[in-house]
Amino acid sequence: MDCIFCKIANKELPAVISYEDPDVVVFDDLHPRAPIHKLIIPRKHISTLNDLAESDKPLAGHLMYTAQRLAKELGIAEDGYRVVMNCNAGAGQAVFHIHLHLLGGRAMTWPPG
Ligand code: DGP
Image 1 (cartoon, rainbow, N blue to C red):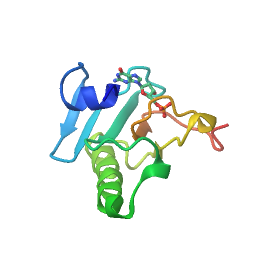
Image 2: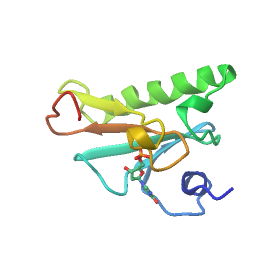
Image 3: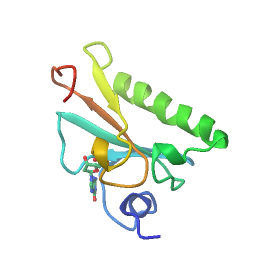
């Protein structure tokens, strides 16, 4: 499959990986929008949030739990951070392998626009 995030998870493409386990990989975003900008992906290829199956519910929870655990480890949990998943091109999704953006280290406005 020609998916850049599958290739990063399989170490066929380089990335600055900060965490990995049998189900999840975390690496720095190539175009960071904040001092801390991590991408949290499942190893399993799922194209969009719309493609999440009921059997993927534990995996989705694992992604979210990884985000809060990393936020604490990185020291941004108390000040605040943002976790985002874009779904489809209309919402800005550019890479069609689901990923959570973990953004922190600066003040953020709401709504994001
Ligand atoms: P999204 O727009 O939600 O699909 O976010 C995709 C993000 O992926 C975007 O912030 C830039 C990042 N990205 C794209 N290609 C690469 C890559 O080859 N390596 C890394 N580390 N990040 C990438």
